[in-house]
Image 1 (cartoon, helix red, strand yellow):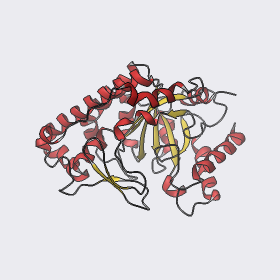
Image 2 (tube, one colour):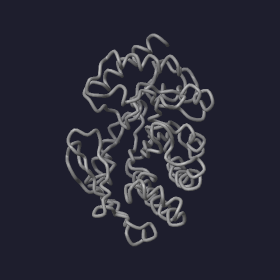
Image 3 (cartoon, helix red, strand yellow):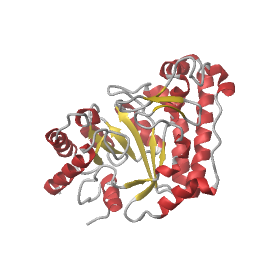
Image 4 (cartoon, one colour):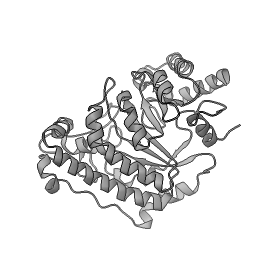
Length: 328
């Protein structure tokens, strides 16, 4: 029987896996290394402020938090004044701050799992966290030079943070969040994505790859089939969060071997208060049988190894095991 790591590599290389990769089983996330996410509210925890000064709200009963963008709370009120209004937080380097992450990483069996750095939010998300979605999208059209400067500033910050993460925990993999679309389409056109965000991600993911990181897993729970060529160009190995609104079998046929697709199990259709094992079973079986064994990882589209409602994630794991027994 292959290890989790070996089975993952066989799957993404089009080799001979002996079972389906089971959601996030191959990624050992070192959340303690996400030191720049401090201050954000816990589920239902009300309000909090992250190190960039962005105010977050996570009301009771909601599945996620989101920045507050009224006039009082916006960090960036005028993109042309970003140099005066946006201040990158200091990245801690003290050994005591990183000690929990280092200890956790040292406990992982790297023959079995990938020691994985977790980064969120990404570059696109940071632009709209600072100023709001509408302002960020309009700025790409109205003030492209200022947006390019801001994106470069955010990119250099990520690179500085990456250097410290690599030095401290020596990750084998990176799990990076940046939602690039809705369920129906990407937020910006492929041409605009190429102009503004591909250069940034080529720098970031190229830096990780050049410094010992074997696997780049990018989370975008969305439609983003039109951005797949860009994903390949910037060095992504696995697109996590691919929704069933994308034609995943066709994407595997066209891009398998260059990119692996992790998802297809739409969290909104499976992970809800009245969830049932039968619903999960229907979705898991359909995904596994129609997409196949290689270049595909059945997984909830949610951006982490959990579910919003208790029991769903574990039930999906059991069903993936069942499909492995039937199909391998």
